[in-house]
Length: 182
Length: 398
Image 1 (spheres, rainbow over the protein chains, first blue to last red):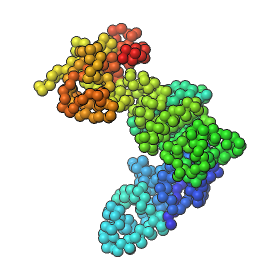
Image 2: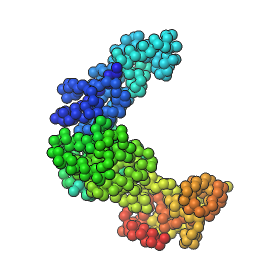
Image 3: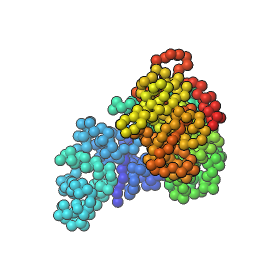
Image 4: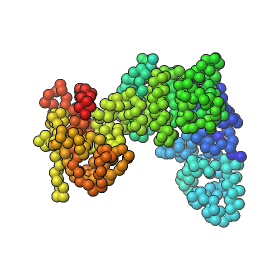
């Protein structure tokens, strides 16, 4: 089961209930937790999560002129939480933040800190997967493991660590940071 | 009633990138204004400033004479329709349109009245009990419009709402949106990169490029009197032809090299008046493909504007023929009737309708127009003249 998570910021806190109703209508099962003026949204097994958040953004503004921003962060790490304040009624991923502020040393430091939290074994799998152009067969060969072993490791990355390597933004972000760290 | 006034609006992002430069525009009540231009020209940024989604860096924005720079989006009485339909997937069409009103605790009778009225305007009455997955793309977009209409806003903002639709559906929805605008009568600002949408839907068009307004005018004005080379080339398909040459002895001349002959196009008195001060200088001649003729009364009217062109590519579009050729190495496109039997490599004489031709400065690229109040001026500037009247007379003559 894949958990989808995003941070979001609402310009007018009085509209929390309305936004909650919009999110419930769109995702059906969600959990929202407020951390002062920012909240985390969690739902499960949602494909095209970022695209759905873009639609919610449009919906919220079309019906209620609500200004809301969403930030999707890989690994559910709060390191990137502060960047939600740089967003203006948009949906962004960590990859987009990184590219937008590529000259900012703090963004680079935060991105590297995020990746350093991954264990060495998992990092080896990730590096091989990226090196092999996201091809599972080639990755298994590269690691000298059976294809089933690789699938187990990939499922562990996705389901246990919430590093969704099937998501393009996550993959591009990891590719950039791992190469910088290396 | 809803009017808008943009006064010296600028938008600069934190990264010091300026997206919009000195934007000035007065929008009258019930107008359908279209911002058109290539990607990155600042049209969506300007729309978002009206919505309140982007902060205005400098300048003033008025809605109904009220300064709204610091007014929150929810207090501006605007409704914005986006490219994505953004429908609630598990609700019927009726509930999709009613949802916003329900959460705002509008009385049930009022909700039903507004939704049914909007459905009637949009032709959605037979679909009120359907869910979005049972609707076509055009129907979904109409539901999105309906959600905006039920809010009774003063101003509608639309950000490329037809971009997700296939070409045929876009054509159909264009005319539907125009009809809806007439029925609802609300002031609308519409953003698109498609010049055909702009031409067919707008009461006035704002052409933008690189954050700057290039021209503001009715579709007819912008098409027939482009302010500069960019507008002339952007509006109209196929695009306007631009030929580089010199103004010598009352003629537009493209010099010959060893393998080509010198081309001379005689200019009308009006054009010569417009490009005073450019004798023996480079100018750009602009002429639309449909204003170049292979036969007919133009040939007799402008014999001095006839030149031989070798046809390089010929495209049959059914009732029209698009002919691509060269004039001394410069590409030219001609649109003519498909009744002409023109083949590749044919060398034919084509005549320019010089009453529809324009001259542009090669450096500034602005259209050259004689400035009446400054007789003998060294450099002509782009000014308003009695061109609209002149255009009507030209149309009548044809």
